[in-house]
Image (cartoon, rainbow, N blue to C red; front, side):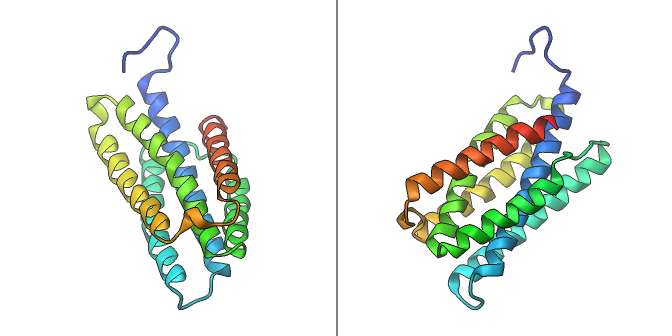
Length: 179
C-alpha cells in the first residue's frame, strides 16, 4: 500500500499492529477461559474450546515475543480486556454451547478481516510478520468454521448476539490500536 503525506512511518504502523494483535490474542485467551469455566467438562464443546484455547495461547506467546523483541508498549487497556474477555466468554457459555460458539463466529469474522487488512498493508520488509499473521488468520478461520459446525447460528437471538460481539470486537481493535 502506498504511503501518503502525513501517514505514520511503517515502523510505527507495525508497532501498532503488534500492540493490537497482542491485545486481541490476550482477549481471545480470556474469552475461551471464561467459556471453559462454565462449559461442562468432558463434553464435546469443552474439548473443542480447549483446543481453540491452545492455539490462541500459542498466538499470544508469539505476540508477546514480538512485543519484547520490537520494544512495543502493550495496550494500556489490558486490565479491561482481562475482565471483559472472561466475562464475555462466561456469559455466552451461560447462554448455552451454541451461544458460546456464536461468540467465536462473531469474533473470528472480525479478526479475519482485521488480519487480512494487516497482511495486505505490510511491505516486503515485513514478510515474516505477514506470514505469521496469515498463519494465525487461517487458524482463526478454523475456529470460525468449527463454531459454525457446532450450530453457532442456531443460538438464541443469533443475529443480535453476533452483531453485539462484532461491534465490541471492532471497538476493542480500534481502542487497542491507539491506547
